[in-house]
Image 1 (cartoon, one colour):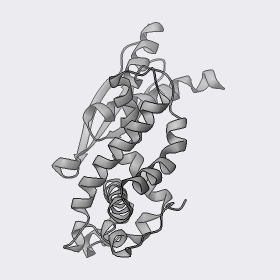
Image 2 (cartoon, helix red, strand yellow):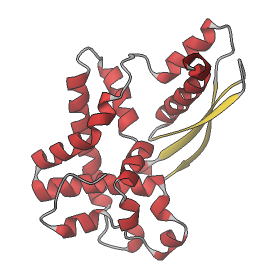
Image 3 (spheres, one colour):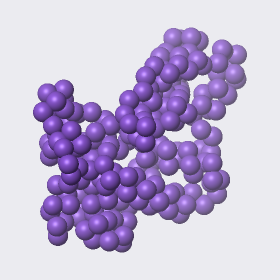
Length: 218
């Protein structure tokens, strides 16, 4: 996949892909701006495509699209890892593969498009990148934790257990890792990630629910 935008000022794109480990200037300020732009543009898309959704439902849908793991996935599709400028320590430790670094670079790149071409160019670029992802969102108004709990209760099985297993990143861009465990009808453990513990739990619950429903789908 290629970014559907051509920079007039190539230095902005280069700065967006410069990690703080490489020194200054770097992409931290652009990352902050890109995060806000992404949130607003994706919110607009969800407002248009889910006219009956409540504020809470749209927030949950946005969290599925705009989180560290999802943005890192987009960064990999754009092959940003190959173009990142990292310090020697991050290079040796494989920083170009790390979700948090890739997600930050993606956010910074969104800001770079905005700074280079203005809001309309940024909006068009983000909408192009997220169009298929928004279209693929489930229409259920219930979040994954609720659906998993109701499914287990309906079958008379114990409720899932959630365990925080780790965090990483700076305070303004913390990533949470959570395990969701169910013991019946089979033992399943799924690892979820998110920009908050709640979102990581939702991610893990979705994975467990998908595993439980696999036999039914087949």
